[in-house]
Length: 462
Ligand code: ADQ
Image (cartoon, rainbow, N blue to C red; front, side, top):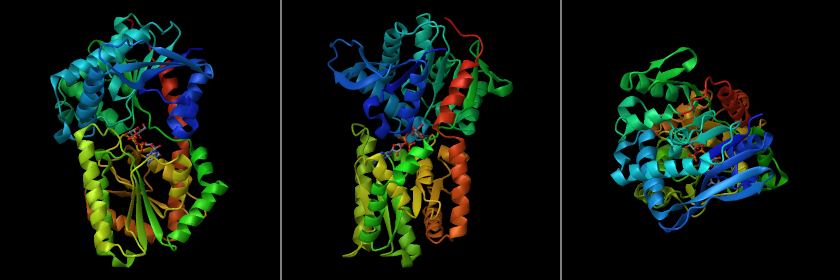
């Protein structure tokens, strides 16, 4: 059996994996099966002339090899090309694209360096699984070192249509490097179609049966593998005695008011200002909700060194302050905004204790919060999921209330509908959604991806 090598920008801390969530645990399980190696950045930023020696730690028969980034690499590869160019563009936000030529050089350099360090660790029987937009050219760099084993790539974020992608400087090079993989996995069939459109329209390639995609003299497998969650672990976290007590406390404190919950990293793709505007609209259109409904928004900060993130934080604080000022009273705060990470079991209890889950990104690869909200519900009294049509999850989760996050009236009406939905309809929708979330859980995602990778054809040695 092949050893699995996972490569991602950041390596999860496996000591705390059970708290950090489904993805780390799922990958850890795969790495344990036949022995494994996880390679990536250790999160440290060192001086430009410091040595960049890989560090090895062993955890339950898994080798974890990490490397630091220099200050220049952090600014060009991580903050620059990855998060000021690829992240906004792949989320269709060209207005936020902020490009400098040093970014691309840094991105290429870090991928080349990581490949050089990783190539020394890869054996002839290994299978390599690379994750996400930071590392798109990694396989093409590994091939330069004579690595001929199977290499798969999974993109966690959306892949936009060609008209958007061509705005990314050096998009042609970026797409060409993807052809050094044997398998590319996307979140949705829409992403697959966008990629294949680019290949046929911009690169003179062809798409064959089963998604086999050819261009640049190579033929690779391309499919969607919608990512999922560990359903039972979320359900269990939401149903412990501590969770019960927490839900009771919440209900008492809220004087049996209803709660709507939003949980997102504080990112401009998540549609948070529009969500707050939609909540204000709910109070305007349906004043019966005044003093009756609270929006709890949990949004821990991320990437604060990128200006667009500081701006969204200010906007959000201003909006929640304005809504609370306009509608709040001595005994009711309409928006409760929590700007920090919350333990996963607390999140699960909050999901279960909320009448509606509000997941309204402007664009999202999948969105695991939508699936976690469903998994946490109590079948005897389930809440209602309100889901943006622009989340990858909407391709599958048809029984959610699907909304256009740009249309505040649409979202406000969905909230009103969710808060007043009869039990039979809630139960029916929840049952159907839970079935879907279970059918495509994180284990299914991992196994289908690795199964498809193992079935790919000729390996492509350089
Ligand atoms: P993210 O953009 O981070 O992921 P998401 O899929 O919702 O978005 O995953 C976030 C995870 O972090 C969830 O498990 C959630 O519970 C957790 N989380 C969020 N806020 C938290 C808080 N305050 N405290 C603790 N935990 C919190 C990227 C893509 C997504 C894609 C995933 C997986 O942007 O589209 O679904 O990768 O592929």
